[in-house]
Image 1 (tube, rainbow, N blue to C red):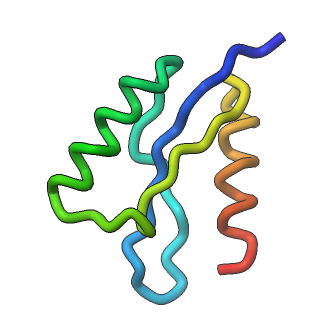
Image 2 (cartoon, rainbow, N blue to C red; image 1 turned 45 degrees about the vertical axis):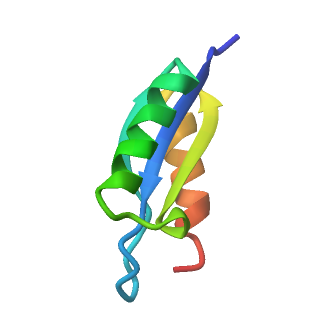
Length: 71
């Protein structure tokens, strides 16, 4: 069984800009710290998400693709 993996993704808000992976880790607190750092650098909450998936690259890619399907 795959372990939980947390991935921080961002979108810059420009037209047709897809969500992109910024950072990932098995530890949620580590990813949360990166999220907070990006917020401190001016990123809006609406421009950041933390995804929870399995730890296979295909799982992560599928979750990001799902976010981007309507862009």
